Image (cartoon, rainbow, N blue to C red; front, side):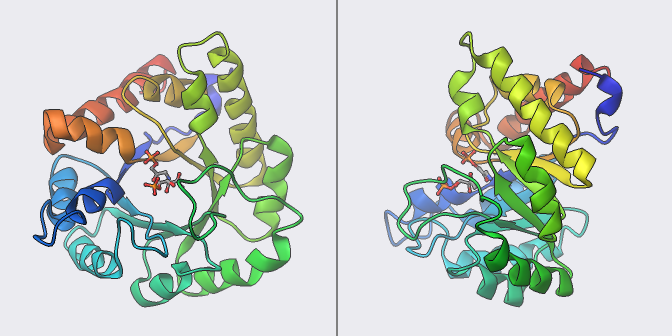
Length: 260
Ligand SMILES: CC(=O)[C@@H](O)[C@H](O)COP(=O)(O)O
Ligand SMILES: NCC(=O)COP(=O)(O)O
C-alpha cells in the first residue's frame, strides 16, 4: 500500500450515542442523558456526534435528534451526522435539522442492526432525488456501502459526496487469518471511492482493538462513526477516557501509515 495515497487529514471520530438512548429508554427517568453523553464526548475531543433514529424509536427518539441539534450549535466546529433510511423517517429529520451530514442506510423498519449497503444500479432511481434534496439543503450525503470497488463510481454518479464502508466483516475477521485479506478488500474499496471523487467514512463494530489497523491500511478514511463498542467501553472507563483512547487508536494508525 502506498502511504502517500492517504489523506493527510487525520480521521475524525464521530461518537454514535444510540446505545446511551437504549439504556435511557428502559426507565422513564431520563438517565443516562443522551445530550450530556454527547457533550462529554465533544469536550473530550470527539469531532462529531452520530445518531441513527430508527422508526421504532428503540433508542434515539425524535426529541433526541432535536436536542442534539441544539447542542451542536454550541460546537460549530464539530459535525452532526444523522443516519437512516431516506425512504422511512430520515428525510423529515434532515429537512428540519439540516445536519452537516446525512448517511443513507438501506435498513428495513425492524432491522436488528445495519448489515449491508446500497446496491447499484437497483437503488439509483430511488436515491437520486433524495440525494439531490439533501444537497439543495446544504447537507453532505454519505451512502452506507459494502466494500465493493465496482460500486463506488455508481455511488458518485447518484450524487453522493462520501461513502461509509460497512466494517462489520472486517471487525469479524480481526485477529483471524482473514484479517489481512479483509484489510486489502477495504483498502481497494476505499481507493476506488477516492478515484471516483468520493470521500470515505467507515463504521460498524469498530473498536479499540481493530481501529488502528483499519486507519493505517485503508487509504483516506475521513471519519469513523463508532457507537456500540465505544459506549460499552465508556461504562467502564468513563466518556472522557474512552474518547481519548479511541482518538489514540486513530493517532496510532496514522503514525503506522507514516502520515502523522
Ligand atoms: C449504519 C450503522 O452501521 C450504524 O448506524 C448502526 O446501524 C448502528 O445502529 P444500531 O445502534 O441500531 O445497531
Ligand atoms: N455508522 C456506524 C455507527 O454509527 C456506529 O456503529 P457501531 O459502532 O454501533 O457498530
